[in-house]
Length: 189
Image (cartoon, rainbow, N blue to C red; front, side, top):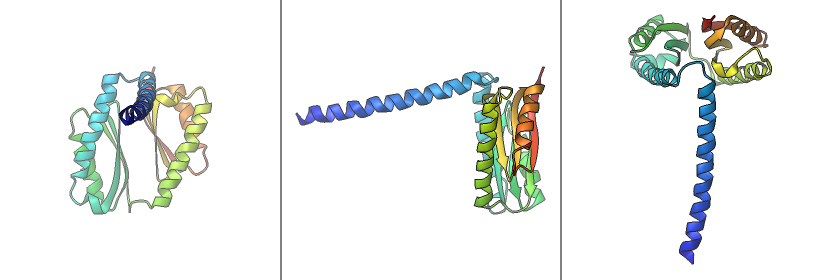
């Protein structure tokens, strides 16, 4: 009897896990399918991002003097964050450029101390506001772009038409608290 009870509990838990895994996989598939990049390019970008992260983290003195984030979209690398020394910014850019499958490096690392947690929380809030507004605008294909917010600056990556890019930039720059919008995108015909 006890064995049957344990088996029943396990089956219930496993069926719940399968549901969660299936829903997670379906959500990932939906995002992948709506991306303008091929699935192969999406996988290459994730691999390249990990390799660039590793290369940037190998830069001497980066741990104590910088906070640098790496984003990759269609072989283009975006470096954001802050570094206390210009040599670290330059070294991070060189490290990123040395990685295979990197087509271009957009170095947007700012000279200065890493931002405090309060600024990071503000960036999360700004990103949420921008994504919400973009979701309501049919001209902006939110699932076809990457939106990065760093110290109140907004970076938009993706493959967009000119009208999509214009609409996305207009929304972002009109959100209170945004200091700058940087286009890091490829324009499609």
